[in-house]
Each structure stands twice: as structure tokens, then as C-alpha cells.
Length: 454
Image (cartoon, rainbow, N blue to C red; front, side, top):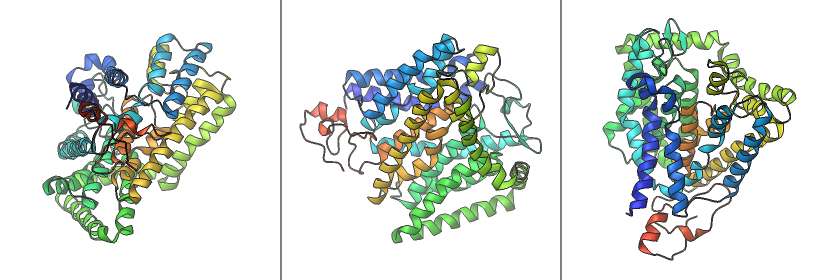
């Protein structure tokens, strides 16, 4: 393995670990550096791009060109709005900086790297669940539930005097996505090749169940439910996997029964969820209408937006803090509403289409892989796809998970014995990859073979 290959892979792994633990740094370890750590992954992604450009593996595809052109236009038109240069720069990094990583990751990682990251996620599940339990038991003003910067009472309220557990993340949204991605890797192992130790996957089932029960987060429940629904579809559509699907159902039932019988936490957590769902209007009002309202708000923004928008970053929490001295969703909590009001109908709409097109492209590749017997990409799309389309990119953890999970999904679409370059918009010339080797490996060995990956 060449030095370039080792370096860029280490940077990708650094991005992965920072995504999981930057919240712990901001809340507990170095809260005084919370603002700086907000963008701690940005230098890492810039370094990854620099190495990729140096080694000529940075993908120049329609998706990347679309991203670069939109970024330039949105940046230039931002100065017709109310934002300052720092606010505009933050909005630029939130909307655009990390997006090319999606199509670059498959040129750097191998399927073995994806499996190892899944192993790390599952290994952290039990301590993460126990941490979430501690946060659930502790009061809103406890040190366990401080917000970024060590802010006392900085976590969102759930119900019955409890806050929404955040784990090692800055806020509860990070834990919700982490649980969904972990569920994807868990189902991949239970329904697929069974590459992880049995103790790991079997301990992960009650850990996810426990974390969900005390999370106080409807988003976490819905996200994991989407992944589980896809997992059940995988199981029942394949005769060879029906037994594994029933085994999963049995394991889940036993885990939930054990928690209900052995702990009072289970009943307290269920009461929190009951009050949250009922207080929010049930499934119809609290979930369907809640998500539908985001699209309604986006439609309203179309008539209220100025032609060039108010400026990149104005609607983010950080932008509000820079402009007004306090964090708030000044343009509404809906991502599409924010984008349209910040960049105008034409450029904002083009940016939304970019993200939706990216989701459909990744999902299409995942479906093709599923038909070829590879189920992990589809499960990962279920875990992170919605965030890619309309997640709040002004929130760094949501942005990081959306981009990284989509990149892992593309990497996992390759056959088990290959890691050819993957680009969801239009494919690159096949000369940069050979079966069973990464781009770096081909250059190292001087091979001239053509890429014959499907």
C-alpha cells in the first residue's frame, strides 16, 4: 500500500471518528473550543480533496460540476442579501463543501473499510446505549445533558421531565442517525454474509432496542423503523434469508421482553414516547403532517423569496448567531424553506434538485446492487437517504452523516471482490480502476487492465 493511499484513508477514518466524537469534545472535553470544533471536519475534507486532486482521482462528473457551478453562483449572489462575508462562507461550507465526498469515497475506500466502519459502529452500540440511559435518568440540568460549549440545559426536552438523549453527539439528531446506520449494518450482518462475531451482533439487538426506548426521539424511532422495514423486505423476498428474518424478529422480541421485564427504564421510556406521540397529535399529526409541513413551508417560501435570496448561511443557527448574537432558525426549521429563502427560487431550487437527484442516483445504484445480492447499500440509503435530500445541512452532524453514509452506500455497491470507482452521475472512464484493486493499487502495480465491474 502506497504512502498516498495510507494517508488519504487515514484522513477518511479521521473524518469518521470525528463525526462520532466531535460532540463529546464540544460538550465535555474541550467545551471552550466548541465553536472551532463545529467545523473540525472541514480541514480534513479539504485535505482529502487536495490529495485526490494531486493523485488525479478526484471525480470530474456532472454531479461535481453541478455542485461547483451552483456554489460559485450562490456565493456571488449572496452579497445582494443581508449576510456578511463570514455568514456567507459558513453557508457555502454547509451547502457545498462536503458534497463531492459522496462520489470520492468509493475511489478511496474498499468494501473491507466499509465493513470495518460497521464493526466500529456496532462495537460502540452498547456503551452508547448505556450513556443514553445515563442521560435519560439525569435531569435536564445535569452535566450529562449539557449542550455544545458546556451549556447547562442545552438539550431538547422530551416529556415527563426527561430530555432527549444525545449520546456522544452534540444533539439528539446525531444519536438518531447513528442508531439508524448501526441498524443498517446489524441487519446486513444478520441477513447477509455474517462476517461479524456473533457476540457483537447479538449484543447489538438489545442495545439498539434500549437506546430507542429511552431516546425520547420520534426521529430515531422512525429512522430505525425505515431501515427495519427494508430489512424485512430483503428477508421475505429471498427464500434463503427468510429464516434469518424470523431469527431477527425473535431476537428483537426477546430483547424487548427482557427489557420490559427486567428494567423500570423501559416503562419510563415508553411513557415518554407515548406522551410525545400523543402530544404531537399521534402518527397522523405528529409524523405525517409534521414532515408534510416542511414541504408546505417550502412551497410558501417560493412566493416569499427574493429573486437572489437573503444570502447563504443566513437561515442557519450559526448565521443567526453571527448576525444577531443568538442561535435560532430565523428562516424556519425546514431545510428546503431555508435554501429557497437564502438563495432565491432559481438557485435555491437548483440546489434542492441537486440533492434530490443525488439521492435518487445513490438509491438507483443501491437497487441494482440489491438485485445482484448486495443488500448493505439499500439499507444504508434507508438510514441516511432522507437527510441527503432534506436534512438540515446547517447542523454539522446531520451534514456529516448524510454525506458519509451516501458515500459508504456507493462504495458498498461494488462486488465483494472489487472496489472500482463509483460515481452516481455519469460514470467516469474505467481506466482508473481494476477488479480487486483500488485506484492507488493500480498505480502502485502499474497495471493497464480495464475496469470490468458492472
